[in-house]
Image (tube, rainbow, N blue to C red; front, side, top):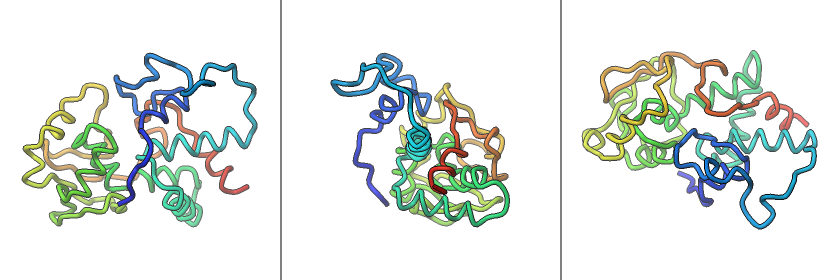
Length: 204
């Protein structure tokens, strides 16, 4: 597992948006960038700047995935039939840590990655500790016995700010099935994501 080295809320302030829709995001109090130049008036952003920003936002949303992993996911999406941007979103949503997050087994994507890496998640009844594992349609993701009692999991399940999407079918509070690969408009992003700009960034 790759360790996240930067403070997760810095991304919110850098982008000026509440990326994960959390009530404790600093953007809710300070809607400008971090640092001494954060309140400077910004000029018009170049096409490259817009593309880079779209990539950083999408990459950050999925738990600050490393550039190497994210680029590999893009290449896999480009090799598939159909729209590359849609394929990219589909592959990112198939990550095990993201399905755990969508299922409300964890309050944040970072917590989801942690409970996967600590061996608290089962895929089709088998323990899996690889957060980036790509799940298939029909895979059953469930909590391990210890995880069912964890305060983190109980807290996540009571969070009011997000709902479990339809492509993650629930079976009680401890088990979900990855029902289908979602399209962009089905994914419950709190902010607008622009995978088409990410595709433009990598295809320069």
